[in-house]
View 1 (cartoon, rainbow, N blue to C red):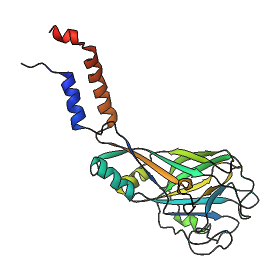
View 2: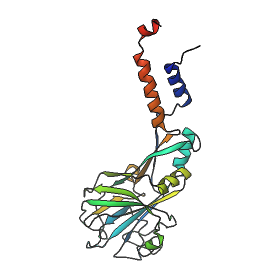
View 3: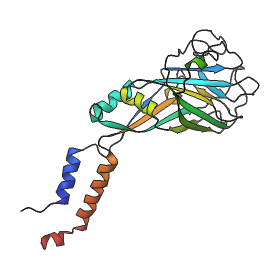
View 4: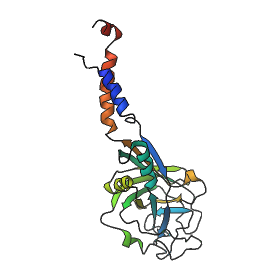
Length: 253
């Protein structure tokens, strides 16, 4: 009877699951983005080149921002790499790039603090075409935002901002059921950014900023099913056993 060969088993695992150790990532820019202002409750700023978040009580009012991502590209990419539905979301991160508050509508100067990021169940908001110099009344506004919020919205985490007017800031988002569900189904995902303290005030490039690498970016990383961690653990055990078996010991058998 042939003896069990752990080395042969390791080869079989690697052959059957060639992507076990390979994570794949997709980076997306928003399909829509806007900010709203407590000082101009019926004004839309969806056509602005920036989004902004400022705490309540600052001279120019409180600002909140919204971003919307189309996750169908991510789903298609992971399906192509691993097979339809044969993958799991491993991590999701959001990156914002700071810019100076070069319009009188923004609070200035920028101030360090924390931004709270939430997943929104409702994706029906419209970006609009308003700008700081020429706001409109179409699209999302401060006064219409409350109707889009829900008790089913989920907190994704916070983003720490140091008050700089340049540079990228990244937050690793919590893998809440809403965001993961949108990703695996290839649906739209909306996010709301609000002040998480009483001091923060920051302006960030929007999706329409000229340099693509400085726009808001959502990076999604996925791994294949079954869980890569389990396969790597098994592979590690088999590899260790193979390495312990020296050529001399094999010849003596």
